[in-house]
Length: 423
Image (cartoon, rainbow, N blue to C red; front, top):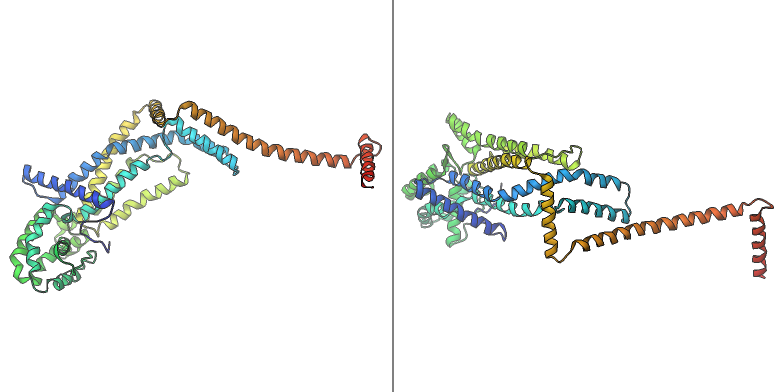
């Protein structure tokens, strides 16, 4: 994960969403401190994840209902597709699309399906990723913990070169910090680097800024306290925790760090198992989905070793939230009266069309006209071909008439008239 600017993302879509989510997380962080005296980023990540998934629950239920209706109407759509399987002409394609559209109207759903839900959900989840990847950029209460140390660093002669050396020595290549800037932007870059420093880096930071030993120690103690989750520093990566503590024979921390990728994999597998699966295993899309369901948890497992523990906590919390939601959604969907749901969807679609000024009679008449037009074009083509074929057969039969027959005498009269007309 390289070339990522860790200051607040300024994208037109994800930027404002990430800032809003950061504002909510900051509120959760402050609320926990005011009510319980707890300052913990890991717990704030879990609570914010739960809150977001609760807000997305109505969209998730709607998406699941659509999936259920799709499974019910799929046999009808496949029957229509098989009906026009070998017909590639324009009239047949138009007729097939018309019949498929009527099936969607029958069930009261849109062919677009869950596109709207995904368009809402995806930016939110991607913005959450940005917030959890660099908490101080979005959570003001955490960022303020670095203020005193950063102010001290900026007063040290040659601090820009020193900070570049810190980035190089501790392989913080993912932090694309530009120390040629000034003001608040420069301070934000320094905070980005400090937040990404592993615990071993903080212990050696006094070697780079010997006059700030006390400030470094106090800041590290506080940041380590709020970053601590299950004895792990959430800004460290599981791999760095495993390698550093294995040498020290601190096997408890090694086990806990290894648990993050393992739980990320296991919870995603659980989530996939609980999701509705395609009924038609021969379908190409179903096969692709099956492959994806196998690969994505494995990819998550590998990546989880190289990203901060905080992101792993987010993935685990999100998967657990989805699994719990899916359990209750499955119960709800199982008890659904699909016929009643279809009727309600049809009524909603009808009201929507009425608001647009489209009556049911207009739809039926348009469908009839379109169907007649398709059939008419098809029949015209058929009649023309048949007439041409019949004419050729008649001419061939006439030219092969037997001698003395009425057809032969008619041919003699025709030839006599043609000769006289040429004179």
